[in-house]
Each structure stands twice: as C-alpha cells, then as structure tokens.
Length: 151
Image (cartoon, rainbow, N blue to C red; front, side, top):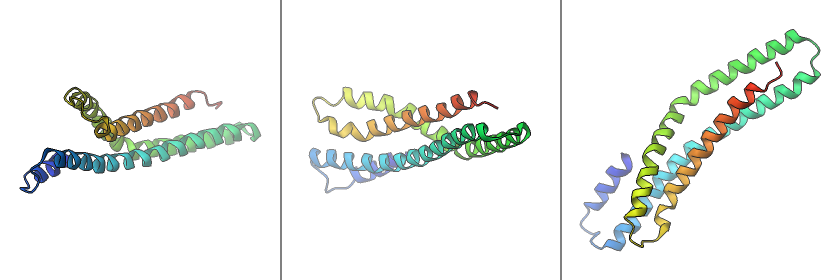
C-alpha cells in the first residue's frame, strides 16, 4: 500500500507528462520497495540458516555425549531456542506470505498487460517472489530436520 501511495503521488506531479518517464518511475518505485521486502527476506534467511546449523551441531554433539540425561537437556534447550526464534519471526513470515499472495497475481497481470514492454520491469517482483519461496523452503527444512534428530 505504501508503494501505491508513493506511486500515485508521483503520478500526480505535473512534470511527468510522458509515458516513458512514468515507466521508468514505476520501475524505480517498485525496485525500491522490492529492495525493502528483500531485506526482510534476507534477515529471516539468516535466522533460518542459523537454526539449521544449530540443529546440525546438536546432532553432531549427540555422538560425543555419554549421558542420555545431558543429551535430553541439550535438546530441550535447543527446542526452546527454536520456539523463541520462530515466535520472533512468525509475524514477518506471515507478512511475506501475504506479499507473495498478492505479488504472484499482480505479476501475471503485469505480464499479460505488458503488450511487448520489456520484461525488465517485472524483475523486482520476480526477485521478491523467488526470495519468499526460497525462504519458505528454508523454513520447512528446519521442521524436517527436527523430525530426524536422534534424541
């Protein structure tokens, strides 16, 4: 919605009369807001990667532990960290899913209405779509890894 407000306010400016200037402006505004969204994706990807590494480290550490009680305690601590991290990023992940729900139909609509316009104007939306899909894949690998933990 913020991108739409900025876009509409820029279009209301009187010095942007030509269509080519509006196309460049449109691409610039969408690129800027896509960059903001991709920065959120990038941050959550780092959280997902660190959680995956933490699970892998636990699995490697289980081999060297001799006490099952200590392994159970370490796994309980790891699960608590996983829950805390997931609670911290769940709202941002939900927002990115909502962005994806709106981005894909709008991307298809933009492609159908392009009438031979360069595909370059669709690259920011494609980057956001691919980034959010990659993030969903990483988040699902954390759940999948937890099912194979030897504890």
